Length: 206
Ligand code: ADP
Ligand code: 5GP
Image 1 (cartoon, rainbow, N blue to C red):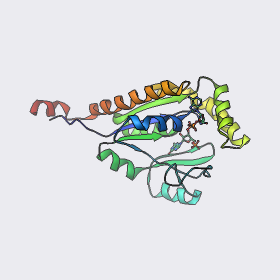
Image 2: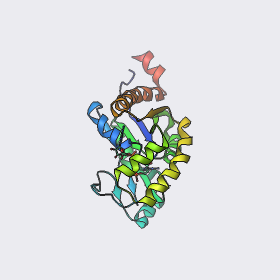
Image 3: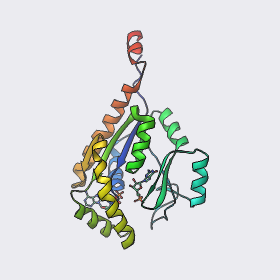
Image 4: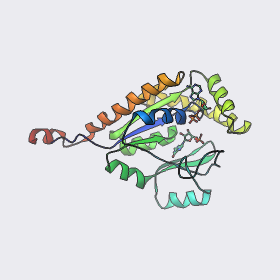
């Protein structure tokens, strides 16, 4: 019989401040059976962020030990800090047929694509303009002027990668963008069924 369920990965990328976390919070109530991949990072926690909820906050030394131990599915240096996705919880969630959601940068997307291409759906999220991105980063008031400046410079490079993604969401109206993300999340599960190599045999024998 053809299996109905299969783990799938949904990757969200986009410049810092475009609204990825805000959008995810909006859509969680409308999608089921998902697992959000909590990344590990060496960046300092922002006010209100919790260890083990938003990120696992670790030292550079701890992060480098994990790299050596082969604990990451992918990792990258983003805006001057390490960020990485731990392999074990991802594999567990996939075995449980969950929709695994990643909020990772364009470098991470490239690496994971190479490793797990068949079960990946990806979406690039951005603001309607660079000016709006700058406004949101300043308005969020979580980062220093220097950090914001670095993120704005990096955003102009990151945006060039959007064609490597399956979908593009311009997060202007939050409700509209949320609806689009829910549709993509649902499609991601359907798409991952294609990766079954035994699909024809299963169908014939059912
Ligand atoms: P990211 O996770 O991509 O870094 P955030 O989710 O933290 O971005 O959003 C950055 C800022 O933009 C936050 O202050 C958030 O409230 C705001 N924001 C998010 N989406 C929208 C939107 N559609 N319209 C206006 N402001 C938004
Ligand atoms: P922030 O510091 O604003 O939380 O995140 C900065 C950037 O790091 C964002 O583009 C975010 O998508 C990316 N990021 C977060 N976690 C990971 C990760 O595990 N791997 C990679 N490659 N990028 C990540």
